[in-house]
Length: 324
Image 1 (cartoon, rainbow, N blue to C red):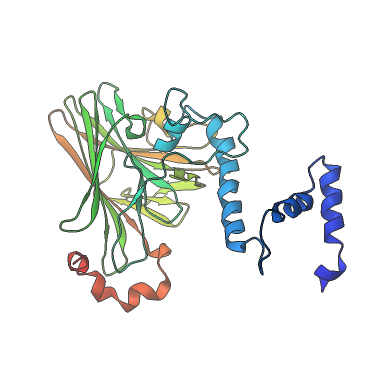
Image 2: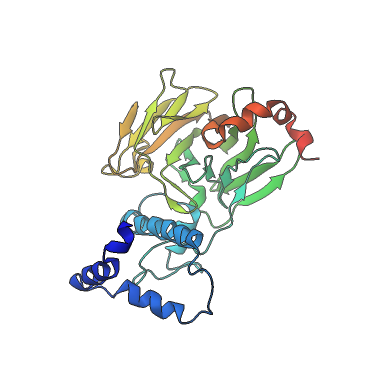
């Protein structure tokens, strides 16, 4: 009833004219003249998806463009680099979105509607449209291996004993290997990352929590260490679990910049950020001549419909057989 009585068209036109903006109703009318008569006009699903897509693009514009000294996902490192074939000029772009490297891979399970993602450089996004986990290598001499900045890595699907995405990144005598799978337990399914690294002079395997995914920025407002220091709690609810205690953990908010520039700082226990751009790093040492290794788990229960896991837990526990 309210929709009928209020002069919506007049109000929209008046507001647009007052701000010097083209009349959106006139634009829509022009667009419809290109189409054939139909019972429906613009599908609301496409409009909704487009709004979400470009809303994130607006956030990317503010977050990425002014902070190119951060470590960003692979698509940003390529698409924002004028020397790269994937470069897209941005001067007149209203939003900045991933248009060039939309080829991430899901590590899934036939019986579960869960899809932890792995991007072309091994960045892992455990939860749907969530934040990500990146793995770096810091040598004892100060060298830093950042997979998202490498020209080439090796990545492949492994099908035995379970589906896994395996990524090998190497440069300057340093190497990181990750194996990402979706596993199950009696409590909940979880994304598992088995990581290994090697560097002749020794160093640290760095696990970094990143406020983005292959689509762009995804806010992290706070991260804290759990009491036993073997877990990082992201946004107060999602744990990132390690199989051992890190030597130190470092946290940074937006004003302090990316944690990649603070790896030499002293140990801290957490941080909050009202911008939503918290970054964190947990450092795990390995000795000269040794191979470092680490297992990381992220429970995925919050992404799963409540009754799904309870109803068919027994089926999930035979994971390899489900692929046959």
